[in-house]
Length: 308
Image (cartoon, rainbow, N blue to C red; front, top):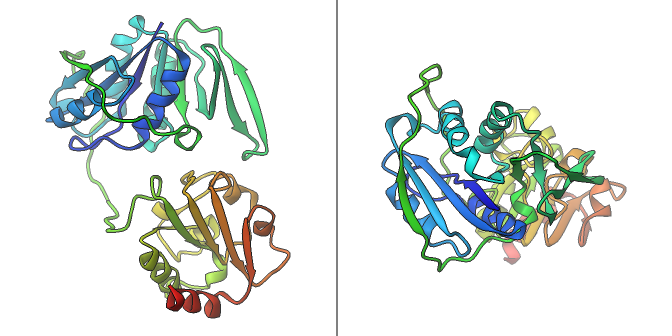
């Protein structure tokens, strides 16, 4: 029994979600191999080789993998699938785009967003926005899984796996990247930050969100928002936390002006400590908060920043 983990990276650095996915793979048992498909991504392959628990790294280096185009990587994974009992990727944007293609091509029923491994063929995943946990047993010969990174601790470094170069199939060429719009921020990555400060519709405007950003900067925290704030145009959708945004589980999550709709709670309720600031004492966010402050955020947040 051997599991193949598809690494998430930018050709220069391994994404943190890969470490969580390796932990999930290790809990299945057997060997764990990591596939690094990219262009000029030798440094990423070396990083993957240092993950504890990884026994082998497959490095596919070719121009068609430079942009992380899902169909090109999916074809590569399919060419390798016969050697593996399980194929896994993180529930990231790229993982959720690429792995369903693999599942369809090998006629496997993908199990999405697993948060626990019961056995080699049985897994737990959240449903109904996290209000229920489904236990799924697969009878597929090759089990395809996406992994919720917040459900597993990051694997330690310190390994020394073998790195093997492999050749992929011919270029598909039906899809190409025509442009990218990237949000560049000096703040920590939202999905991997230890502290996250999020604002909701109660903040009132894009201009007022500078108050929330000031608190995040003071704490060295990542900056997030509820879907209501994103839909209102206060912040870009890159910052959305929730069922249809990013799922986070930092050590500290501060929710400011967020009522706590079920879709938002699904994306942050696994945080270690949750702090809520809201002037409505009946707001649902207080039901999951470890600390709650019923106050006007326009008074409380500046006072908090000053105290810090």
